[in-house]
Length: 399
Image (cartoon, rainbow, N blue to C red):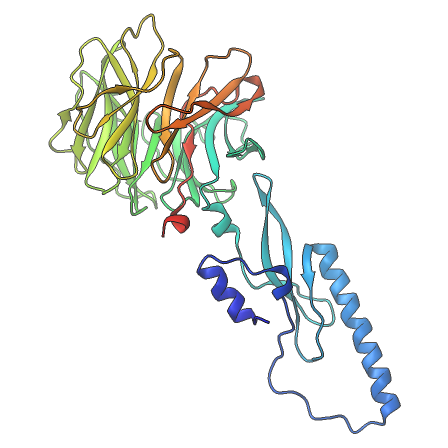
């Protein structure tokens, strides 16, 4: 039977301790044998067992325990496996807990919330709530729809997963105009990052998780691409074409480039790539009169998925993919109602939003070559037909 240390090691290397692996954890050496008579020792043992059972029942009333083990030692805490009260997207987190024989000071020995949060089985998206836009997460099977920003009556949008899948950057108007914020994957720990004169949106994390690229309106009212540290420091503008709107930045998987959309007019937008310091800006689509928008790098950096409309004024977009240098353009969908693609962590599939059904919102999934297309999530009230669904990274699953 495993000790607490063994179970912690199992958790670190990705194995989940089975509920039967909870056990007593003795503290120090065993006490000296009692010199009392057998009757006294028996009575004390009965009282001890009753206390232990009461403590166990108290622990079970606090947590949804999966297993509990009572052993022969009386000088240490009861260690057991429990399903904590915290949940995300309908999934409870199983951890080890300890409680002393008197039933006081229940404490957790492990915390699997971060491990479960990074399993790649969640989608984040901006959707319509009762008070405007909120940030939602939902399981890949369509269950566990959760409004992460329900406590904020203003708009919350443009969510983006951190590389480890444990945090979400997003844009919010909770402090005035739309600024950038970061929160934990369960909606807690909200921190404000930016406060430019105008609005900020479209965050994209650097692969090492230390910086975030975003679109913002600075002094002069121009929409440009910026970067900021995850602590809110080091804000720097990367683009500055006064005749264009630069937005939807996307950090390359190797961390050397930033892809972004440049709008020259309402019906003409191209995709550009630049170095992370803003130098060497290159138009990789060069398609006048056609709108290419909301790009997304494949996880290996060799492909770019994006939405494209050949007649932006009259025809909604479809999903396309091309090589990272702009060659090999391939159309993946043909409904004229699809947008905001996001790759699976292993690059084998793409999710995207669609308004092809006007009754409810949909998030679709398809293979990376455009085959096997199907509805992944269907949410009433058009909650899922808003921009930018994002597939949660799963670094623990990929090593």
